[in-house]
Length: 482
Image (cartoon, rainbow, N blue to C red; front, side):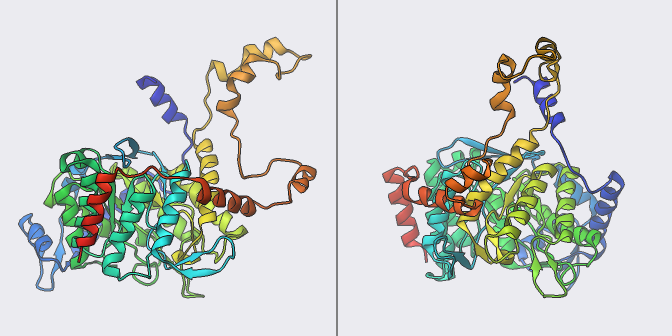
């Protein structure tokens, strides 16, 4: 495909927008005012020194006011796209622009048993099982732990989860960590798999996900890990999770402006440590439901704030951290399918880059493997929609219409055969048969068929093994970790 064809293909893709150019300018100005007039409380000493040396005003209470010119300089120095590679070193994602990728989330407290429907506290086995399922699904592009193992101390749980993900899938890993020490061991695992630090820098395999504390606080542990990522050129997500009405303004515009400012403070620290290091901006725009005291992942206000922060990432031409496939429902049901499908659709149409939490239920507390399987197909259909409508002489088919005329049909036309597979999307789980055939096949629901496919994956799928020497080195590294 030449450059003109690529431009034409991008131009025909449908998009969705909730902000005008003037709206984006106003949010930009508000976020920069928060940084320059109010500031952020920086509790980590090295970051405080970096900001002070860069000309920021530092108060006695460690509130740091960051001038707009410095923020703009750091936005400009961060790369506008990030290539990601799988365990074997093959390029699989190009984060940036309007390209959308999908994956699971991390650190869930509970998991649903797909056979009994019962909820249990997550254990390390749940991490490996989720990674194996994702490894088999073509529309899951990256993996996260999908569980926080309750059968190990928190100090070891993150590293053991990373090892389990690496063993059970070849896909890139987005990781969380307790501190700099276990994050450094995850980086060392990546270095072992790449056979060296230089190759890991050139072909990133892991992405770190971290957060500040809203409102306006940067704790020591979060900044320690952010600085380590800058040093080692590990792509870093730094995405605050301000709660509208609790730790952020109730209004959507104010919510977004504060979240943007909090993310950009991390960007400034990150770029001051290592100019040009890969950074992914974002915001988890949680909404406190004043009737139930629950933080919703799927309230309309959440979706609007999320769409706004995605649009702001395009405004700055920076890769963004996004969301997909979540539901506030407690079980995989009609509500879950609707909410998860809608969020996935919006993410793709808005051009959100790295979309996590596929399979999350119950306000981000519980995971469902059958939901991941069902959403793999929904994401596939969304991607078909996002390819848009090619309009050219071949697809307009006036000559074919002329040849068929008023008395023929298009079933026997070569044009139909040539365009059948590229035009028609075909489901594997979604039903398109008539009532009688559906009934004779067992009258199954979409969830039934998702569960059946899940069991097939768990029984039959075999992830590619890590070479024996590398697996031994990784195990020794994990065993030595205190």
